[in-house]
Amino acid sequence: MSHKGDKKEYAVVVRNLSFRYSNQDANVLESVNLDIKRGEKVAIVGPNGAGKTTLLLNINGILRGYEGYIEIFGRRIDGRRSRKEIVRDVGMVFQDPDDQLFMPTVFDDVAFGPLNLGLSEDEVRTRVKEALRMLHIEDYEDKNPHRLSFGERKKIALATVLAMKPRILLLDEPTANLDPRSRSELISILKWLNESNDFTMIIATHDVNAIPDIADRVFVLNRRIIAEGTPREIFSDAELMEKTNLEVPDVMKLFELLRCFGFNCDELPLSIDDAVEALTKIIETSDGRHIHLHIHEHTHHGVERLRERWKYEHHL
Amino acid sequence: MVNEMMRDVDKYTALNSYIHRFDPRAKIISFISLIFSVVFLSDIRTTALCLAVSLVLLIISKIPLRFTLRKLMFPSVFIIFIFIALSLTVPGEALFRFYIITVTYEGLYEGVLIVLRAFSALILAFLLVSTTRFDDIIKALNSLRFPKPLTQILMLSYRYAFVFSDEIERMLTAMQARGFRMEAKMHSLKAIGKALGMLFVRCSERSERVYEAMLSRGYSSEIKTLSNFNMRAVDYVLCMLFLLFAVFLHW
Image (cartoon, rainbow over all chains, first blue to last red; front, side):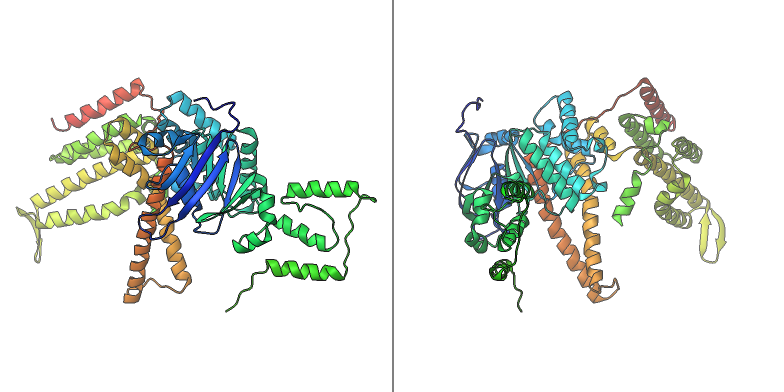
């Protein structure tokens, strides 16, 4: 297959995808349309039960009986034969590593996928070593997954997929249930994978604070695709945020608050990195090389208004 | 519970002894054939010899005696019950009477035989699983052409026994946190019944997700594994010796 050189190449094309589980009455997905280019990093956000996992499973070619059209690198998903090819191209990291790790040792689990690809024994061993080294968990080969922490198991689940060298990586809630330290570690791993690999990544997540770091484009899903855009476009759309019960990243909230105190920036930073950049730029271009904050009459109104917008009120 | 029991099993698999270094495939063949041989023995002296051999193997394996005793205690209770039952019920020449209880020579003989057989088999089986890592046992079974579905079931059970026992424990803790007491009352029993039902639902849902995750990594009815087994001359000789001994017992 020669995909190189073709700039318009799409990794994933989904047209009018509808899906219903056989034990449910309503469709989980309702004519979903997606176009994801090669090498793009995409986040899918949406409330619980919005169909994020179902969408990923469909792109992974696991669920049968969907309506519509799904194409991976120009090849339509249908029938058994192409399913085998999908496994080669698409890897999925499930939300709960206990679902993904089923072997007695880490080595066996990471070797499982490559062995299914029919690789030689030497190649499989190299792939296992490589995948574990990438995530700095080389010493775990002989361990039993049960004795490892959730964060460690999550990394091993990622390794089991990386060892298959997929071109498209699907991640279902990669940061969910992790402690803060493991969460930052996982985000930095994803950032590193973003930079150093020709991956196309599709990440289903609730973690709005992580999105600006790991995704170039965001789809808002609630059974159907409600909105699509860069993280900035999505998070700047206050009406959309309200309608879909989404929140904006904390950094963005803070800087919006700072605006009320007279901090002047045209674009609200979305992540810590953005914030550092924005602050540096503003301080360097200001007269006295410092930033100036104040409290005026309008400050109180502004803060009050923002609080009102972000508030969730609980009633009986 | 299950967790504690399972965690223990492979506690001493990392020791270094002749038994530990014995190639898992040869070990399985040797020990299983010896176990089969001993359970069909009907002579007390040869059975005693086999028990002695298993005890020697136990000593060679360097597994701490306390650990062995603790593990064998539970099955021993059953064996002793069977011993008592046999020596009291098998008809024959009476050795002595005590009111209505009669101990016969034949009963005692059968009882002692059962005890010797059971303990030899028990010790051998215990040695096999406590000196071999679980994944090695499975890989050995795989390479011995053991039926694939069975090894797959074993493999998945090993991993998910831990996961499910954690799940049960979490459920019980959550119930206790809301004032649940484990008592022989209708209310308690009902609650346990419902919890087990819930566990069943959760397990079945998980099994679906596990299957999906396996499919996603290219699973098609077979779990392939790689092993580092390496049969040395010693393993062949040792295995031959075990087989000869197993046959010799019946000579």
